[in-house]
Amino acid sequence: MERTILHCDCNGFFASVECMLHPELRQVPMAVCGDPESRHGIILAKNEPAKAYGIHTAETIWQAKRKCPQLVLTAPRFQEYRRICRRINDIYRRFTDQVEPFSIDESWLDVTGSRVLFGSGRQIADRLRDTVRTEIGITISVGVSFNKIFAKLGSDYKKPDATTVISRRNYREIVWPLPVNTLLFCGKKAARTLAGIGVHTIGDLAGCRPEFLSSRLGKAGMQLYEYANGMDDIPVADGRTMREVKSVGNSLTFRRDLSGQEDIHQAVQALADSVSSRMRRRKLKCWVVQIGIKNPSFQYITRQKTLAFPSHQAKTLAAAGEKLLADCWNPGAPIRMLSLSGSGLVPNDAPGGQLCFFSEKNEADSERVERIETAMDSIRNRFGSHAVTFGGLLKDDIGLEGLHRK
Ligand SMILES: [Mg+2]
Image 1 (cartoon, protein in one colour):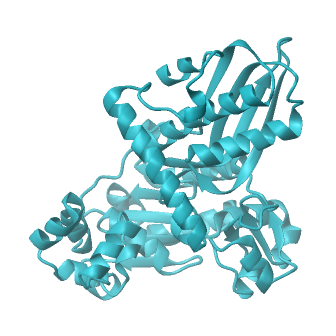
Image 2 (cartoon, rainbow, N blue to C red):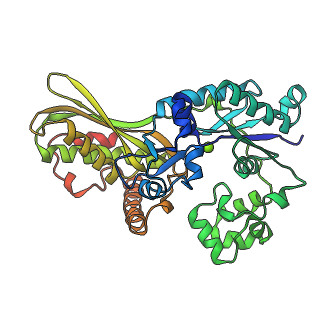
Image 3 (cartoon, rainbow, N blue to C red):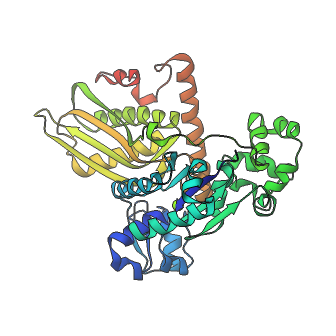
């Protein structure tokens, strides 16, 4: 039987939730952004009045402020967003038990078996839009298709509050003119390689010989060829069996109490190193860095900070951790235990997770750090976790070696 797959995407999700919780924000241009105090923080979501000023998602705060000096900025509150996202997914589950959350505001639904009860894919999509708008107060866009890849393209095709059906009959008209990098899993590198061989649209890709694509892109080439031609049969996973990762963190009680800048620096570096390497393994980046500090009398405090952009680089996590410590802790006071974790997790390739949004210099810098840290990961995978470490960690009298065994 032909499958009917829906991809539901909340429109301007973070900003929609903020406006729903604070209706006075609806009338003024507002945006949710990474660390509002950093000019380099990026816009994550904006409301309709902000859109009218030409504010784009993923541009920097200073670019946005130049277009609209009175723009109201607010930091993201991931707990709130998760709460609303759970309620939205509960609505989806009224229509099918096959709901697979893809990111905080996107889910795939397989409604093949629900058509006898609720009507065609388009009818179900329209009803979902209505229900979410009335019960939650935010709008969603829905793509309807016979596979997941095209359903995802459909939800992006027309927004806000729209349904797009991509069928076997119309996919050549709708999908093929789109740029090749709008295809899910076609990363920046693959798009660059494809541009080099004259492949710019999904239609160009669909018309290539698959062996030729494999010779240029390896296994991914074959996969992209199939996606472009609507040959994707990946099932919608049952979301309830998937465990949601809320945060990735690590903590350490030290062999002796930490005291002084040098100790703190070493410990934060080591924690950031281990946490970032675990995030990279899971293909995640974090928006929020949190530290926890316990003193010898077992008093415990936590502090957290939103980053300017999501990261899984040890260098960025460590810098945030040290900044938090500097703001709340007298460096001379002893520390018994320290933890560092990342939350507000997003997949590597989520909006804002990509490097392409940053200025040239930042991008080159960030790609260099990425290469170094990825190389460290692969050395550790082959030779064990002690094989390589940052220079500063070679002398270890506080018990950091315990971290890598976790
Ligand atoms: Mg969205």
